[in-house]
Length: 145
Ligand SMILES: [Zn+2]
Image 1: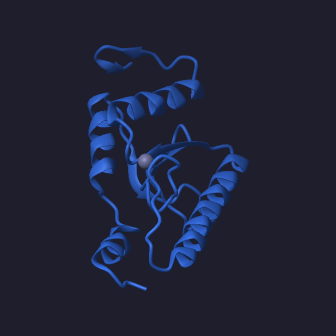
Image 2 (image 1 turned 120 degrees about the vertical axis):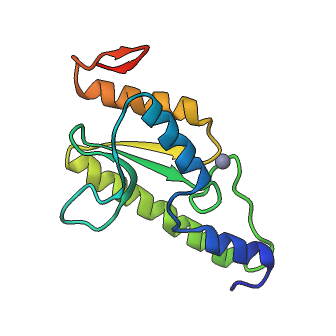
């Protein structure tokens, strides 16, 4: 299937941790004073991992690549083997949804971030998800108190 340089690049880019958008988001969260686990399985009985995990607050963050997860704004279909790619990406999406459903069932909150999103804005969204977890969680200019 890896028939063109573009396709090879895409295949290599999947499943990798520490991608640039992930690192950018982690830097923002860290600057906000937040501490988290990276590439961590939130549920003991499932091996599926989230990119950024707040174990105490039970918030799992996924940073999704626009291509692999079928971002509505940026998904492009390689001209070769288009059907195969569509199926592959829809399987990824189904898997994403399933992971999310299982987490929600176990009382987790899920934040999904597209790789194209501004990391600062995404970090604020994560912050609000954490905030909703505890009414006494205050945000100050200096970070969390
Ligand atoms: Zn996108």
